[in-house]
Length: 547
Image (cartoon, rainbow, N blue to C red):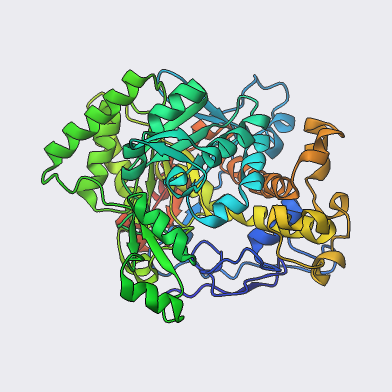
């Protein structure tokens, strides 16, 4: 098994827990006091792209990314001549071809194009309590930067204040809060996407949203995710709430209505309950039946008035992957998010998360292969987003390249949530009267923040004055510091991506190709179809020598 280092002396970062392939700790805490790379980047921004202590150090790569098959064993090509993708004609080549001129804008969709300032989107932030607690930071940050955010499944169903009559929504205050918070700062870039699972479909989420918000929201059908194959879960510690959820139609484990379970809870033998969603298509035994149902569902959503529809699928096998790409293309969906094993933001069963499904790089490599088959038939293939354990700017480049030209966005889960946690904790420590509302976890600023960064938001967040410039001195007072942290992290990811793209001579996202990456070992080359590092360009090199 590949072991990833816990600390990076060059960047002065360290993981509290065991790092995953993404570089994030396998268990990421909302109250963490730092300091992994993503945590630190939420404060430092693009400064973290460079080695620390400039002027007194030299630094060299550990060069360990060559074992196994994973995203870290794809490497990025650099070229010594040429440039493609500049939006304006060259006036002075050497002046124009600099990394700040790289355009990170991207877009997805068919009849209606949805724009994003950076090729990022969030994972689905649904009924988990951590999504609700920090939503203001996540959503405002996404809206200010200008990338799509996804409201995940079951938000209405778990909301105690939502009202359902005859199985249909009459009021959904938590869902409305989430949409309204994002729309307050939405400026035409990004999108609010609302996901539906089996229970959401039964409860009439689609009907409710189209009547209230019209085309301001994108509706998403959900087949699965990369963390688990049995649907979404949350854990609750209240017996009354567990009974409420069971009455709402959810699977609750153990059953809170059984006398023996209630007695066990009363005596402390049982202290929590898991709420589960239902599996989809359980009454269907063939791909043809699923295809018919899926196309009927899309047709129904179009009849309701939805002009933008997306699909999220998980790390099932190759049949399900082909079905998702084919059916999404046939129905002219706007985006298909393909989530490989390795991701996860909620309460997934741990050993399921560790053991089930297709790893991200294998799934994404096959997604390209299958999309290319349809494209060769002349089909207008659905736009793709890749997800599953992706966290850094190099991951973004590699995922875009691996799926090029079909991949428009990289979907990130935990990495885009961390700045929300960090900012909320800082704001709660600086302004105790806001701590409870923002779900801050710190009584005071940790020394590693106060001593290195400062004690005021203007000192702590590298992106503070960028946000102030965008929205004004008066409005920034209303912006949660978690959103400013999201902006700051996005600035680091964006600047790092610009540098990688400039090195590959690609000055717009649409110019990135599969030829811009190579495999660091033969296993990765075989599994991804990306040539091995010493093979790519070898024939051209020899022709130069033999000329």
